[in-house]
Amino acid sequence: MNAVPAEPAPPAWRQRAVERSTRAAKLRAEQRIQRFLDAAQELIAEKGTTDFTVQEVVERSKQSLRSFYQHFDGKHELLLALFEDALAKSAAEIREATSAAKKPLERLRIAVELLYKQSQPRPGKQSPLFTDFAMQLLAAHPAQVATAHMPLLDVFTELVEKAVESGDTRAAKPRRVASLVMQTAMFTAQTTGVPAESHATAVTAEEVWEFCLGGISGGS
Amino acid sequence: MNAVPAEPAPPAWRQRAVERSTRAAKLRAEQRIQRFLDAAQELIAEKGTTDFTVQEVVERSKQSLRSFYQHFDGKHELLLALFEDALAKSAAEIREATSAAKKPLERLRIAVELLYKQSQPRPGKQSPLFTDFAMQLLAAHPAQVATAHMPLLDVFTELVEKAVESGDTRAAKPRRVASLVMQTAMFTAQTTGVPAESHATAVTAEEVWEFCLGGISGGS
DNA sequence: GCTAAAGGAGAATGTTATTCTTGTCTCGAC
DNA sequence: GTCGAGACAAGAATAACATTCTCCTTTAGC
Image 1 (cartoon, rainbow over the protein chains, first blue to last red):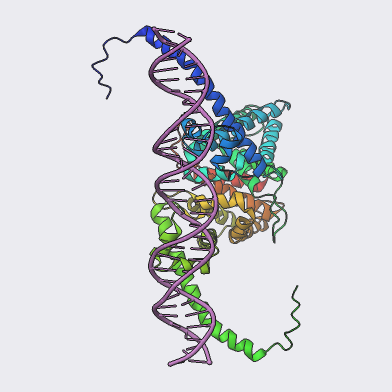
Image 2: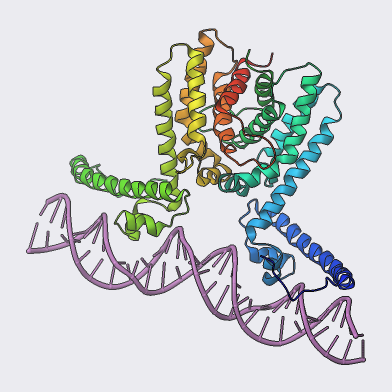
């Protein structure tokens, strides 16, 4: 694999020099990456979809195509980065919001309803949790979605565990149940806001919560 | 809107003549459409995605691009047709499978677990219920998805209503609850089969059913 | 048989992502 | 202070598609 016989002594001083020389470059790179990210975020907010072109991102960030492909493997990676970011932020928000309540079950209710609201397609802007990209990703690379969901799943698992500990509910496998709750909240939010041609209005956050509450406690 | 003053008498005989002359054409058109549909279905099964090109569909169906665009508004419509078809078939299968059981709740269990299995990404072929296209559609045109879901929703609503009638469970708004159950089963199926980098194996059909069962009965 | 619509073959167009080319600039090494 | 390497800008080139268009040929109904 790495047979390099003409490399006798690992030059230590050289490494340090290189490292020093590298640090600055890394910083610059991160700034550039952030500029791409910001520009893309703006475009998504403005256009309401992820249909922007790479050109647009490049122009808005005042950088170059060359640079873009030097920092990202492609548009896909850019979107993936934004997606993970959004979910991590969402998890943080939920953790923050739930800290207000005292009772574990109440906390869980807040979490479910907040996640539901966050996942709902907003009137103006595009919900970052659920863009068309997120959907494609789910179908094409579910593993990456699973990874991105991790922060949220951790929050929900924690909440479910607390609820079980306090005896407010039971759930044999908290993480599994948390996963179900989370996904139910996120996905069912998608189909709301539809004019609903024939059948009545879509489900509400409260209905979702009640459904999940029943699900947590197990059939009975 | 429809002001056509130069159309004095609605020529009845003519209409019949046109209709007769039209029937055959309609049949031919339907055959061609079906050939496109079949070809596309094959390609999806083979490639596992909806990434086939229109060219491929045209070649496989031994027709022409011209003809394709004469019958479909675009690739989008072709996929939408396949999607609706698949969901309608799924609804029929579920109706069939549930007819075996006697107890309403048992029927519902069968329905949930079958829908879950149908929605799961199969090893070889692509689940028609949940292609990447279905995801994009959900994000871009939720109303069309809602329409396509209707047959399934009808089946589930019916099952929930029966379960409520028989006193096996309660549910204030059967259609709402049916919608939640259906979506939970379909969506949670998507994230299974993932190698699961860090956390344990994904949820099973049984777990989904238990979760839904609790949800149906309402929190308690 | 005649005519108009439908169909076939494939070229033309337009949009994007992605890669490649060329010249410029910056920054640390000496 | 200058040199050289790598980062970068600008944008041309490429490639993959969907969609449309053109020019014929076939066909179905009269």
